[in-house]
Image (cartoon, rainbow, N blue to C red; front, side, top):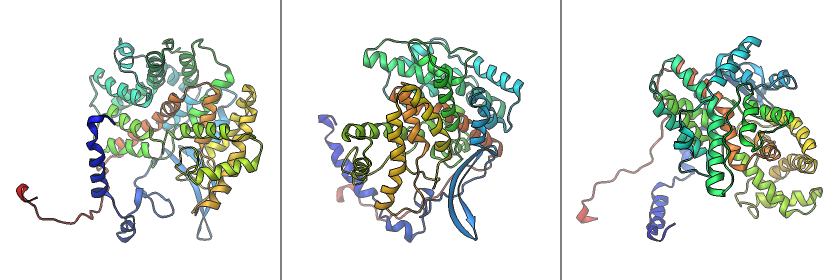
Length: 448
């Protein structure tokens, strides 16, 4: 805070006094905080054909936690990953599925790949005049600014016809890797005094391959590296209509706003540490643990440190073991389960087996420590963020790009939900807030 802004402390105190709501009032008035009930279940706000999540099953009339499952357009995500792994890159194939509702055949995959390749281009001098101007270490902000600026180059920006929105969505899906990586290189050059690299995407390469070759100075990557990143993108691509950024997408779409504004709003939601920024916190937490626990194989020492995290004694003192637990899943996050095997392969190739063993130990110990400390209304397990940050570190991806990579994947899901909302849109999404404000009589200025 600057010297001439000391008034902000007083203003902040006034805000706390005026805006604090007694938690007890939520129960008294039957208001669901965060649109979730006491058991953490979200309020059902809509219907969707795009994806489905399962974390509970009804057994003899009792709601019972079960192993988590995630479906894309009716297909189990684990079966989808197993269907393309080792054979081909899956990003384009699964993006096609989410957008158009069917698995593509060979010719349809090729055509869709060519469509995205043709759209991997930015307006003339856009990189110089927009991305390289006022570079920021917050690449999500840089990405959002770039998206909003692209609207200025679109003569049909406000046209919400299905064909036009599809054109806009496909273009944004294609250029998100460029906007993200170029934004990082601009920041790294101007703020960290490193060399500037602006590599153009290659038409024959997949999204994952292009991301790596644009990021790295020598453009080189191994097939394993690209395949693991590809799977990470597929697993982050979609996660139901109720997650924060996707719900934001549908809310802003329902107002009749344009595609660029909708995606900018979704990006702003995703960047929060409670949503897409969680994998960064996992990596930071692990670095802190590794620096403070001398023997990574000592389970008692690791368990003790996890307890200190929960007790707000170490790390960021927020009392959270990041990467553990999920708003929806209980016993397991299927994305983490399928991802773990690929993470182990990459760790072996990178000589990071010791790190992987530590992650696996924490995945096993953390639920025990958490259940001893707090009342748990459902199971606690590792979520996909627990391993994705570790993967990105092994791929030598800078921390600043972790959340943008999430966005590179999730814009496919956002696009699918925007299109579905447009096709079925009837009313603007407008939840209600119950006022607890007391009525007061106006006091003239001279009498205050």
